[in-house]
Length: 222
Image 1 (cartoon, rainbow, N blue to C red):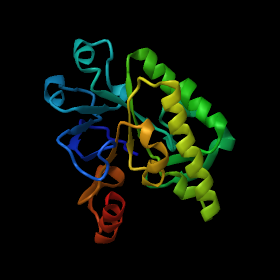
Image 2: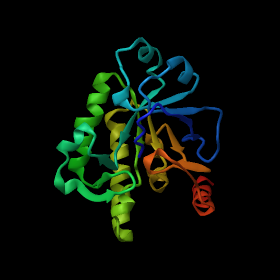
Image 3: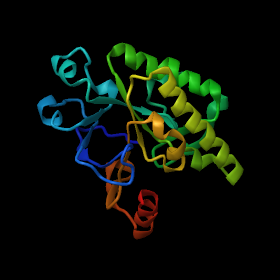
C-alpha cells in the first residue's frame, strides 16, 4: 500500500500473466503524483495512477485512458480515504502499523459488495476502464492459523474472479498475490511486483531489501 504525497515516479518489474515467469518487452509505470505529464508516461504500455489525483475530463486522459489503470487498495484502507467512513466495524480485522491503515476482511461477501458499489463502480462511471489491485496480501497480518489463511485466499480469489465476471472488458493488474495466481490466472491481465532490490518504507523512505526477501520472490517467480 502506498501513501505518496509528493509527485513520485518509478518503474517496477513487470510480468505478463500470459507468459507468467518470463519478462516480456512491455513496460509499466506507476505515477501517484497530481501533475501528470501524459506524453512522458504515455510511452509505457501500462500507466497506474492514484484516481483522486487525476482529472478524467482532461484531454490527456481521454487520449491515454486505454492504457490507464486505477489504483484500488482491496486489503486495507487508511482513515484518510473518503470511503473509510462507510467501513463496517465487523470488516476491520487488524491494523497495519507500517502504513497506519486498517486491514479489512477480504473473506466477507458484504465487503466485496462494498468494493464493487462504493469504489469500483464510481471509478468506472468517472471514466476509468482498467484497474490495479493492491494490498492483496494484507490478510496475512490478521491470519493466525493456516486454516484462516486458506479461507482468506479462497475468498480473495473469488473476489478477483467475480470482478472479471462483472466487468469482462476491464483489464486487471494485481500487485503480487502469488498465493492466488493459479486461481485467478484467467481473470487478470498481468502481475506486478516491486521491492526486489530496494523498496519504500514508512515516511516515504527507501530501504534495502534483504537477501532472504529477495530469495522468497525468486521462488515465486520461477
